[in-house]
Amino acid sequence: MSGFTRQFLVHWNDCDPAGIVFHANFIRWMDEGFTDFSRSRGVDFVALQRAEPDFRGAPLVDVRCAFRAPARFGDVLTHAIDPPRPGEGRAFHLIHRFLLVDGSLAAEGEQVRIWGRTGPDGVLRAVPMPADIAAKLG
Image (cartoon, rainbow, N blue to C red; front, side, top):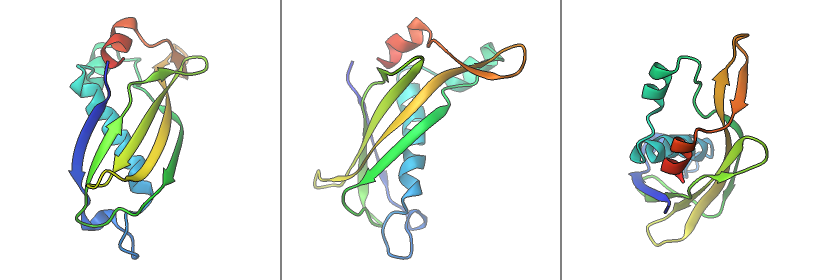
């Protein structure tokens, strides 16, 4: 299955005093993008949690982001997300790219997530992603 793209406007409050996007916003946009990507594929985390109270979503366990060119107030960014790929154990990886209007790379990053559930002891654990969900996201 192909990846997912979305576009959004860089707002004034996304920028630091130097007039460029504050680095932490790329991390926030990766998280928001994963939610939008999942919903576009019919995976609704709110509905899943209502149906299965011990479900805790897809918690982030590692993240990285490299900055390649400045994004500024008023820029329209294209956020491209590759379908999840399996990682070690029960983790999965998502690659994110943020492109400026001319197609040049502003930032690229990777998220490592798990499929999370709490057990009877209340401890969060990584469990295998259900096959139907993996098929929708893949």
